[in-house]
Length: 414
Image (cartoon, rainbow, N blue to C red; front, side, top):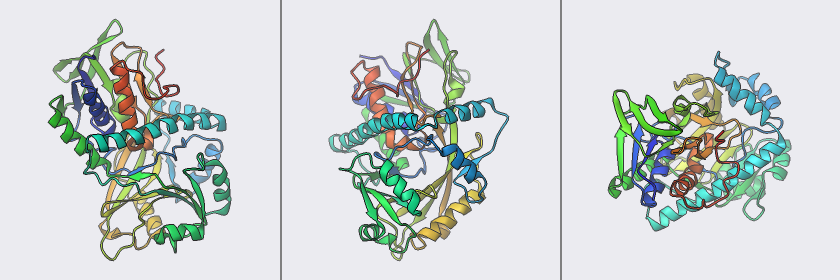
């Protein structure tokens, strides 16, 4: 059995890793720089558990499309070039991944992990009675405003005809009445997609971990260094405090590269996203199904009695500040699409830094250091992939055969 595992990072990835390890009978110490858990990128993300629609951002045609977006004032993509070698290296690797064959290969890796994540969450919900985070299997519509993009996507996005269905405009309105007046020509429907509150999920995991007696939490502690010798991690430094470790997992999101040891390549960069959370009152008519507006790159998810509206990919460095112009754009576009979906005047604004690899595929597994592991780089799919990622890493640490093939997911160790 593995020795005690120390995890750096208290977002949904770190917490699901801790939960999976405790289920394996392994003791855990979780370190988080903030005073609370699940309070950054996991706090107010899109809320969609989008298991079958996991295509990487990097694809053929995306660079040209991105150039067109950047010339528009309402672009879903914003790029602010910086004198930052990490940003330029990431973008160069992203461009290299923008090939159809690479996209299809990486998409297959993500789909394999996503379906494992779905079954893992189902197991935790049923076996452990894990609840209290507004989970629903409500289904999802990827909607299209233009006939050309709808026709193109109908051939490309339907990976499983048994689970994904191409719907006309009339069929969309019949399935989801809130779409009756929306300007969509059609959609792709996946009935078994889910939705939940990621922050509430993190709090439920926290409560279960506390009750287990097997997880120690060190909150408000920033890791300032990792001591190592002869290919083995020895301790983590938190200012003047030194904590010896047996096994160490880095799950610190976009801050993980600052913890990289010599010889490690962590090709992560934060893709900033925004969300609005609207109260849904009796007079409102919010969609029950999750909606992804394909052309505008906006997602809508009803989470309990709130509507989460999330959008934007801003490559602007490590600035977490709210951008009023971007938030105003999201609100305007959302109101144009669903004017009576919720109380827009009472919307709560949020921004988060999604830690992405150029390929869109996370790094899960061992490193060249004998007792150092990674679980990071999930981008906009962190909530979707979290349970499966935590399960895989716990299996590897426990020296069990992983539940799925690790090809394409394991970090390069040399």
